[in-house]
Image (cartoon, rainbow over all chains, first blue to last red; front, side, top):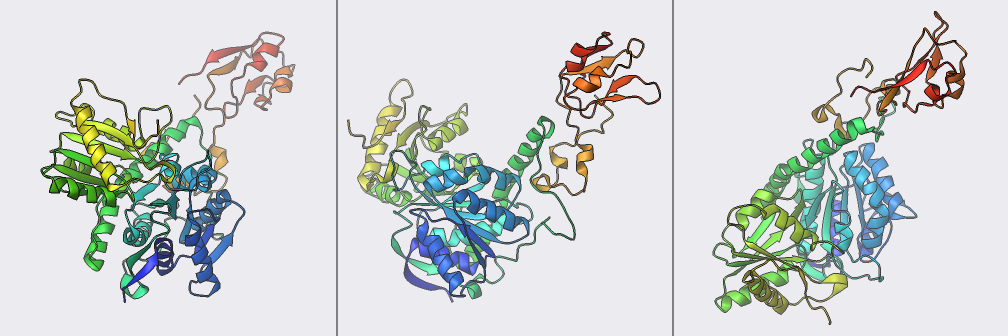
Amino acid sequence: MARRVGIEVSLAVSEAVRVCDVDVISAYPITPQTHIVEKLSEMVAEGELDAEFIMVESEQTAMAACCGASATGARCFTSTASQGLQLMSEIVFITSAMRLPIVMAVANRALSGPLNIWGDHSDVMANRDCGWIQIFVENGQEAHDNIFVAFRAAEDPRVILPVMVNLDGFSLTHVIEPIILLDKEDLGDYLPPYKPVVRLDPANPVSMGPASTPGMYTEAKKALEDKLRGSKKVLEEAWSDFGKRFGRHYRAIETYKTDDADTILITMGGLSGSAQAAVDQMRAKGEKAGLVKIRLFRPFPLDDFLEAVRNARILAVCDRAISTGGMGGPVYVEIKAALYGRPDAPYVAGFIYGLGGRDVRVNDFEKIVQKARVQANTEIPQPYEIIGLKE
Amino acid sequence: MNEQKKEPGWQDLPIGCVMMEARSTRHYHTGDWRSQIPVTDAEICCSCGLCWVYCPDCSRYRDLRTGKYDVNNFFCKGCGICARECPTGAIKMAEEET
């Protein structure tokens, strides 16, 4: 039976992977992801999880091993962060192109340099266009729950795509939270066995991962793009069924007090909780502030997003990554692109915060809302701003 | 180009571009990205075989019936070395039809 326990979020992720009864895990330790796969290797060693744990010399090989195993029809899991994701990056793009439904937890951490082990979203944003489904979770319960959702959506015959579950390094991975852990009995038939459409089988040989000339590469990319976009419907079904069975409901875009909000904060990941507290503080002062949390970043849920911000005059988009030399953080740029040219589009202000583990406090979100309002009253759009920068 | 079937569109591709068929490289037209194709005038060709010698991609062949040399469209990348080296000027590079 589901039990509510105080548990480190990383270990709650491992627990979910165990209950999903994965066949193959291949990973290389890297802070702040290490506890996830360390616990899984223990489970395999203790016989609590009947899986192959393939120890490798690098993240690139970890993903390659998962790809090979997934191609035979095995349910595969891996996890990484930061430099590990960068080293893995070459294979990450191939995984989606080969349509291998691997699930990976990314314990989001800053990219070097300077060398920094703390949390931000620069690792995943460097892999933004990799063709994976990308989910961002806000707390430990979401991290645990979304592993089940990830496998269910990934392996759905209408999808067959890899899924990244992003959880902020340290501020999520290393905290102990009260989390309701599901066990196999609870899970029931929520996650059916993986039935691959094609697989490596000596009795029925196929070639996987072929080369493509210019004559077909474009079409291969379009086919992937189409599948990734189509996966949203299946994810929604997976979340909806999860809600029905276990009472915790998830959506691609989560809204908080947005209906009458004049200014809406846009966040992704673990800082959303602080933003929500800030909205309560501002509401207590009579300010019409709201919050939109982006849970699904890829495929980008455009219609849900437009619906969520429909009544707002100002959006304050908060990014935990910097696009060096670009027009702003990746989420800010995405949202500006989504809104440009639409009648009555709100003013969009961009803020970068929480880089390399820099603390973001509840009051910082109030400052962000105030700054966004000042910007919105200027005659020309203002460039993005870095919060808490020491001059 | 050559006698290829209509190419598949993006919706025709198998999942993950998996190749279901063995020996599928027989259908892999490695020369389909060329921009020019050598055209040989059989009247002028003196069957010396220099184009065959110089071709970096083994795309020249001797027609056993006529003894003249011609190009294999399947492989030829259109580099033009045969046209340059032909001592009789029998080979001219023509624009590839798109």
